[in-house]
Amino acid sequence: MTTPHRLELRDVRIRLGDKTLVALDTEIAPGEVLTVMGPSGSGKSTLLAYPAGFLAPAFQASGRVLLDDRDITALPAERRGIGLLFQDPLLFPHLSVAGNLRFGMPRAGADKAARVEQALAHIGLAGFGERDPATLSGGQKARVALMRLLLSAPCAVLLDEPFSKLDTHLRQEMRRLVFERLREAGLPSLLVTHDREDAEAAGGRVIELSS
Image 1 (cartoon, helix red, strand yellow):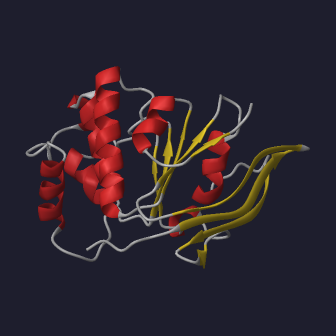
Image 2: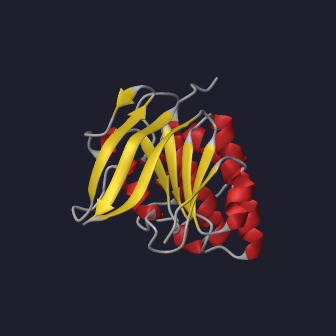
């Protein structure tokens, strides 16, 4: 049984000099994907950086980030319990596929080897554990990156244009897989994209940022 989580961005404002890039006050429910859309330079990735904990010093930000009613605004990124999925899979080249999946897994819990094999089967990659990530296709790498994220047991997820580098067929397949898994896990998720089809596939609220 999954534990429901809730992510809140309370009166968040991000500025660059005298310009306000983002002003947002919202709550993301368990299993909900909130989509933020806008053209390049509108502040989409900057918005993600604030709850993730790595906003560049050039920006000024105010407001609070709450995860399950816990204020995580001042915590270092690694202690926030937030997972990220980027445009690139960012698999570790010196680790096998299984090694990549084990990397972020909590130390406690059931046998890691068994969990990795089960996870690979869930994404259609049974028997791929000892493979070098360099031998995988683009779609296979994207699946491994998604499962690595889920195995790290985040309490919320941030998605930064995660489908933009996939071809049309893989994009549709990965949208379906990603959003199904996030809903099943009950994870509140924030997606930034410029692609209207991403927002439609996410099926949740959409916030538009101007340039």
